[in-house]
Length: 248
Ligand code: ADP
Image 1 (cartoon, rainbow, N blue to C red):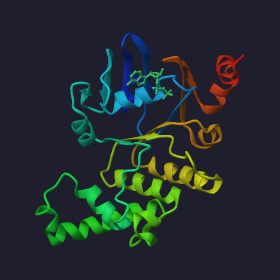
Image 2: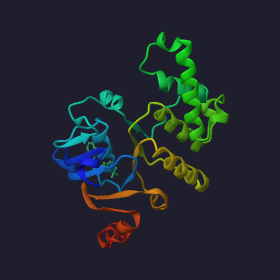
Image 3: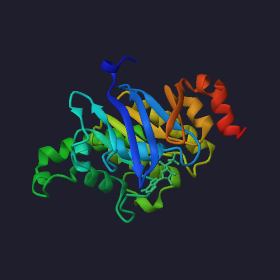
Image 4: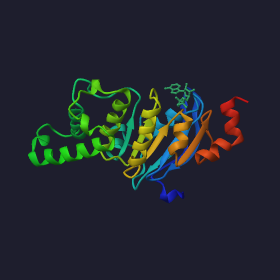
């Protein structure tokens, strides 16, 4: 895609930790409504790159241009969230003793006063929105169950739903199918395919079958730099990628 079509553009991003370059001059972009994977061996710099996008880590060089805002590097993490870039971490962030529905309500109203969320009209609209998103992730019939009673996969989908009610433009996911069996992995793939009608999704992932099943674009990283980019098939046929993965 051309630079002007991009939702997010990373331009010459470098990240240094005590002189060690974890990310080295990375330039790439994420288009609206695409599922964009970042793959590569451990230590390649994938997670650090997501940290840069969500504002958790500030790079030593480069620029992050987003939507019609321009460079977002000066923004704080919470300001970037408000602009529509939402990150799901691997650490659980649900309230385990609350119901699925109440977790959603908290996610939807986390930045509003308790007073504001008491208005009836607002609550009615909230309920519709919450059920619409729960339906998307297949949890609408479990809205009254406590979060802790959900399966591992359902917990992950609830966390995704809690981000979706905020109507992000870009969703960042860190190994979303880690710990899932095949059925849950396949369901996650279907969910992400539906989500991309609403927003772009950037995913750090190790499970290559999962990547192949839904990727629009794949960026392969190695030692902080981009090795190659393209469709899943294109990158898997790349000789350098095969060398890195097979260790030859
Ligand atoms: P990946 O997600 O591809 O496995 P990371 O982005 O987590 O890779 O890490 C890239 C490199 O940067 C690794 O060598 C890692 O040890 C190093 N690194 C990551 N975060 C820090 C940090 N906060 N301080 C020092 N080194 C770090």
